[in-house]
Length: 149
Ligand SMILES: Cc1cc2nc3c(=O)[nH]c(=O)nc-3n(C[C@H](O)[C@H](O)[C@H](O)COP(=O)(O)O)c2cc1C
Image 1 (cartoon, rainbow, N blue to C red):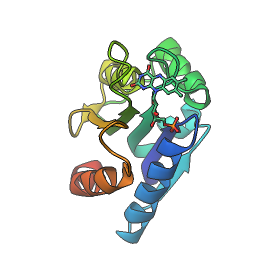
Image 2: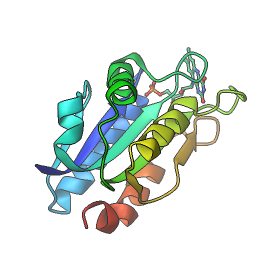
Image 3: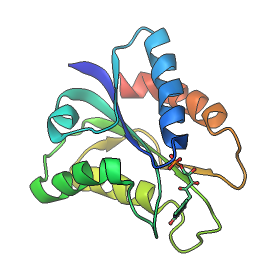
Image 4: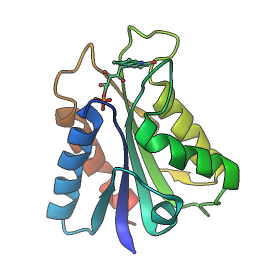
């Protein structure tokens, strides 16, 4: 079982690039980590903690590559028994009503599944931040003790 499973939702590659940088940092710190681009329920169940890094597409929607996993989670409700989790939402605040809708949705699902949030949803606004990895990597690093406790 890996220490941290990173589940990515990305349309154009921004969130995936951030997730790859986070994966590298976690591995350098000596933890086992796996990045899932097309994650499944089995992957989700087989990690000690989960980190979701997802952009938002459409009008507040989860990107297609992550959509099936989130649907499966909602349908089958695999309870997490206080498994630690964190969520990073990449979005664009010009989509005012649906800003970071995917990240918010994912955070809610993980709460419903009785996961243990190690921090509030971390929001990255594309209008303010050109290099999201510069914010996200240190943020995840600060949470690693809780994610890997
Ligand atoms: C067609 C389209 C729809 C989008 N819809 C939303 C949205 O509803 N809410 C939001 O916060 N951002 C929205 N965005 C902004 C993206 O989430 C943001 O640009 C993100 O950095 C893209 O990351 P990705 O390359 O990993 O998909 C949208 C972008 C596009 C191109």
